[in-house]
Length: 131
Image (tube, rainbow, N blue to C red; front, top):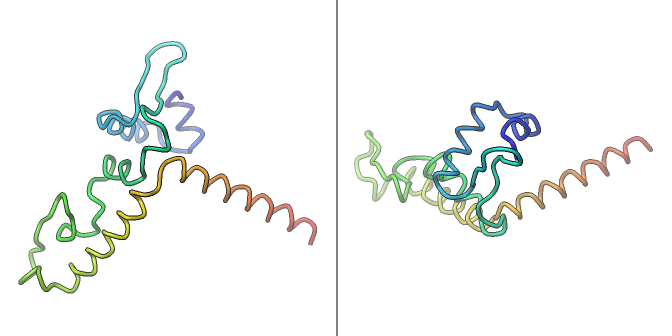
């Protein structure tokens, strides 16, 4: 799909979308083809790409705080001992649950959920006209 079409369809600024696609391309999740019929496409099946992979490539670590990260750990300046820090312990749980959900949800799963939500909303909207 062409960047211009994708940006318009998803209402995303073209420059912002280009940056995202370049990161995903560098990570091997998308490919690009130049010329007629070109554009960006998934390099893998949407069933095998997880939301966790995509988010990490675009945003970096999932952890809400650096001290809760597995890949980019950094002690907080105000922390005396992170082994007993209440905030870190809770944020580790948050990070682990986010990772559990995102790493088990494929792009195909997310699309199916969005399609179902659209259908449910359309059904709900059409019912409102009868009331």
